[in-house]
Image (cartoon, rainbow over all chains, first blue to last red; front, top):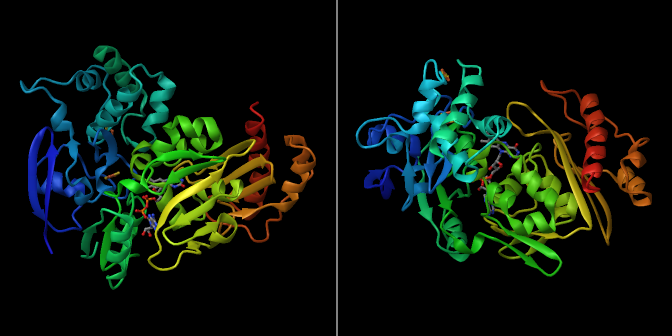
Length: 156
Length: 266
Ligand SMILES: Cc1cc2nc3c(=O)[nH]c(=O)nc-3n(C[C@H](O)[C@H](O)[C@H](O)COP(=O)(O)OP(=O)(O)OC[C@H]3O[C@@H](n4cnc5c(N)ncnc54)[C@H](O)[C@@H]3O)c2cc1C
Ligand code: FES
Ligand code: FES
């Protein structure tokens, strides 16, 4: 039986009539048309679907949309300034060649921002450790680590 | 994932009655294990009772000589807690090393303990510290709780409300993680307290177990050297694509020594 879900997404109120089995990722992509969070593995391994739920990074393919009832979700779309320019962390990924195909990038950026919320000046080792849950098939990670380091500096 | 009826409980009593009213209901904690099982149709509950809104199941407190962790406390909350760091630093260390950050933001101690995955970390801490599983109706010692692979002493519909850990003199946890999943290929938890020494092993067998020979050796002298001559038979241990039983048996010795070294603060 469909259930009513109300929550905040990227600072705006959103609501939908959904089946309880709908995943948070499907709510974002299919109902709200926010396609920045990607479905990579659909088994909680790759981190391409990472968004923030109540201020913390989660894998949205492994969370029911209803687990976000009354909560606040921020996706990659929610971090870009209104004028369409890039967030400093996104800019750092571009400047440091931290992506190739770009499939993992939204998840990488959301994980990086979660890390900086707790540790504004991480070391390279800490960045690598914190990216445990984000896989990239292209870059070999080196430039992602450099991008996050530079993004952290740019954000102060 | 098959369809189900969804209930969001506001209290322990409400959750219990919602579940008992269902054909084949399941509690939902962080969902980090259950949702994957439902996607694979290994689990197809008729009803889901979401514990996420029950405030009384969250939080960490020190109660006399015990550290009490609410069932819905996430792995990251345990890892970041000042109370845990002070009372049982090995437990904070264990929690900080479960899966990855996103899993730790959702996964809970109650869900991990109820699930009793043979390679999960928390069961080693419960058995290695002689903890008590507190449910709505009773208190179950860890020694009686983990009864087999994915099996526990919980009755159908029985809700874990908290885990109570006696605060030891010292403790340590060392795991050799599977590099992909971070689950324990072998994890060993050791503790020393007034009531003796405990050594608990996860990842190696069908379910977490104690090693009496190691406990006796550490009782006479709590040092990594005392474990030099103790071996663990490979007979009942797991063999899979990641490691043979003999390799796991060897790792138990290595991880036990590391856990003791950590407990000694070296
Ligand atoms: C990518 C990945 C990596 C992981 N790595 C590790 C690891 O390295 N080490 C490790 O230990 N674990 C690991 N896990 C598992 C993780 O710790 C899970 O969070 C945990 O096993 C289950 O907790 P949960 O809160 O998500 O429970 P859920 O998935 O919601 O529930 C699990 C089971 O417990 C039952 N249950 C939940 N709460 C209660 C309760 N209070 N009372 C009674 N029954 C209850 C549910 O009905 C269900 O049957 C990993 C998971 C993933 C996805
Ligand atoms: S799609 Fe969610 S972790 Fe891969
Ligand atoms: S840039 Fe292609 S997966 Fe990371």
